[in-house]
Length: 265
Image (cartoon, rainbow, N blue to C red; front, side, top):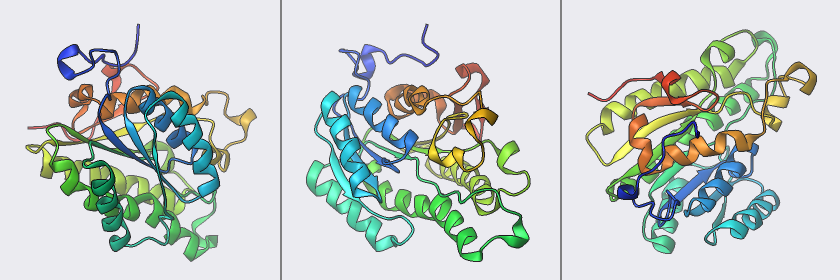
């Protein structure tokens, strides 16, 4: 039995493709989780916009996505250097090319490695906070007008475990992760009565390049491939994600063990 809620025919998934006719923007699409989620979203019927900073890596993801679903769109953009005007331009491009946006999945983050705070490079600390928290907030802000135009739209932020990244040496990345959960709660309160639902995705320990900066493979036997969390991303982006409004879905556990950020009134 699947660990995730199934989407009923009333939700528009008559052919078993819960994201059929939806447009989904994946930020951080070149990374481990972002690329796996993009492929899963395309398999579920979505037209995917691939946002990332490395064009060569995006090209590889493009080929994988194109092989299983609708033709995706590429949008190379470095979140570290991008400003609010760049995100407004991105939203305008999506509107012009596709006419709508039904979901935004943010998988982008920057983690330079475990470092004592007093020895950390100030620029690296600021980069981790910006790419992990500020840039996703700016991107969400730019996309909200498009998302509001849909009857059912999803804004999903990927988050880490607070009890882990709140420990020693996690620096700017750890601070940004706590801020990201605060942003989810705040946006949920603001948008609780709108067509846009806000939720978080905790993928659990994954074998990705980001996690490898903190753990070696032999220290991390519980880590899974990023594909293990892709089904949860599809759930949150689909109509079934209504059940997770204002919550964080833990992809490593059944739905009954999810963590509430703040439930809808």
